[in-house]
Image 1 (cartoon, rainbow, N blue to C red):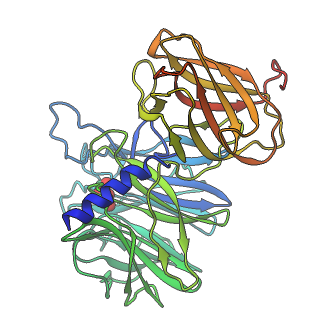
Image 2 (tube, rainbow, N blue to C red):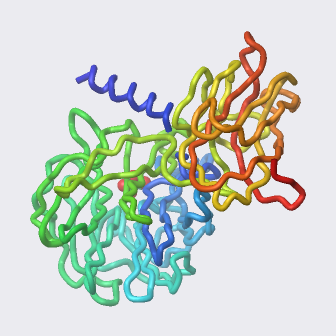
Image 3 (cartoon, protein in one colour):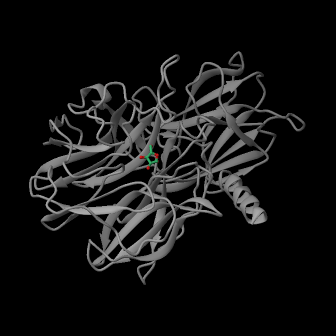
Length: 450
Ligand code: FUB
């Protein structure tokens, strides 16, 4: 067993070497529930923070919720705080228990479901609801929690005109039907039958090809925290366990959701590589596949993740698809949290797949670099290290390997989606040409195309 865990962790570390995850780096985000509304991708995560000093806050310290949407090809917009713990009409003040939420659309209204600690002390968590005309709020919060529902992790299924609420954390998950008003139960919650033994939480239901899927976080005694799924021919079950969607990736928790966006299935989940601490998590996403027979192919986590960066999106080349004779490390100095390509030896290169050059309007490429010397250049090529050269940057002395600045250079017109390779050139024997954080393409009237 130990050997297989070791092998898996090794695989995860090397997956890190092929892989734009986490999705955001300006704050910690966990429990991502992704939804597509009118063709646009939104994520409704929870928010981990460092507990305030001297305050008896819980270890998962979660004060509020933000909403994110995917803009352009790979930029996540933070719509700001949508609910603070102290605005929950029925919630305990400073309870820091704003755990995993969900948001669904029924008719032309959006319903945001969230757990919080009730001030009446009636349960560990109750589930509240807010209603809005927009997926990003503002929401009108119900004065009371949903009567008859005790527990965490709401996951809602809209099946034609009916809505079902799954929830719970423990050895059982629960389900009930919601009334048309979406804020009251229409049936007493019952245990979901047919699920495997062991601790479960993070119920996320979906319907695919007429089959009901209940996906959930599931702890195996010998493996730990996995994401599993079960299917049934009706929302109340009984369900049949069908296997794992993701193995234990050593996250401590792994709360997920699944969405179909522009024809691709995507699994959202969380990990904690940005903080180095499993209670300060960051949401991630990777593509997922349903096989012809309805089973789900296990998802291997990557750092590259999803998204096709285009003009205006940062191309985080450190979340690469391939690297040769260079390394990735966290940035330091005067730069926001994240990673960089470093130890860039002569002729080292890094590959990043699926960049959308659009209709060929980009004429400028920018690069965020830190450099402690002045010799060398790095080239942006299409497809492979000897592919067509589309931009060339001469390195600058930025003041040191931790001092960051943005360089600009003209680029050739390129159309469509291509993989790119950054090739670092210095002198043989030099260990570091430059530290590179990100690239960005733009259409700048002050620049001429190469
Ligand atoms: O984020 C707090 C709790 O941890 C969630 O409600 C669970 O699903 C687990 O991710």
